[in-house]
Image 1 (spheres, rainbow, N blue to C red):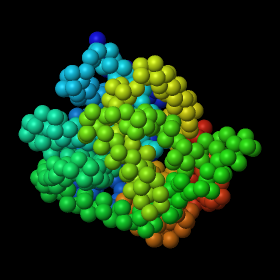
Image 2 (cartoon, rainbow, N blue to C red):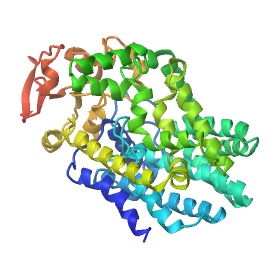
Image 3 (cartoon, rainbow, N blue to C red):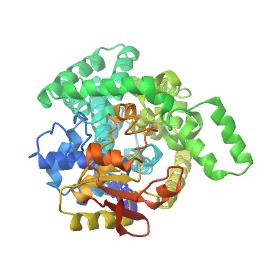
Image 4 (cartoon, rainbow, N blue to C red):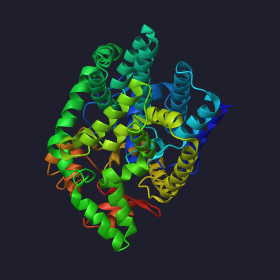
Length: 501
């Protein structure tokens, strides 16, 4: 019976995308373009992604891109919407098996009822369903792969402690290696959690598993992981020196002034602005929405006697890392609430085993309400890339066959979908390349915005096609299209082609 319930996590993740076939997150286009480049390179890791004139080296953790390329055989756009629902369902299935092992090991009664509660809590958990920190539920992202592999890494260590079976250590090390070549954030979780767990558990096992995982990553990647490691280190350094002080999503995070501003916006009933501030900056408030299950479990460990040392200590370790990364000196290490996401299964186990049943029912109701709220936000939120964008790019693909270079006035990551959907070379603004691009003031006079000097783009990079979201043409930057002819237009998008062509 409990295994039949595993269809729930798949459906609540797939159905919203069923009604939003073209709603693909900006970050996801990069991952799709990377997967497509692997297909075009005969399933080998390319040196650079296809189609990007300013593209840097392809040193992003590649494994999720590669496995999707293998499975989709080039149809990455067709299968993209199924990836996260399937991976999450596998994640929850494995979590259920892990939970049942713990129940059996400690001879806990009423395991069937607890298993059903366990599945429902995971299925509707905001730690997995939240949509405020990048693609997670409704789009293809390495995060779902990284979270699954990291989970297997840690539970294998835990099961080794319980059963003293060396096979679990080999499993842990193998999946640790996969994490390192799959997810940048997962690497940070692996390192920080393993080091602190070794200290709190008075055991070298997590630390040694971490070290050997690096060797496994090198072997699995045929030594390509060293390039990934160097790129990630450089990116972290750039974020530490530049990103966390200038990136709009980071520069005001968790400042006292933002909490005060939030209160003021509520008083003047500016709910939209208050919501933005709440989601983006108020770390110690929004976790009661984003990670309510983890917060409850963290509270429980201080009031009940947790029988299992590993469960208790991994929660404490996660809490310490969350607090540290919530403040400016460590914010370059990523969104602090995302570290709590990796505590989810351990938190739900503590809740199911130690929280009175009536409170669990109440928590399920709260989680369901939060899920409905995220659906409302998801369906109401605007998207730069939707049906009208697909129509425009399809028209370009069908009607421009000569050698061209296309550029978009749409959003920061526009060049990924442009190449993928039109087949025409574009500029690039990769996550690990943005800081270098910002140094070129001719190309990017304003942080994260390309120049409006179309002559420069044409002479320097050959840009002769411009696609624009109309809403961007009525803001502060004024664009001159006098040297272009109107090529295509719909409700949202306009395409210009240079007269010299």
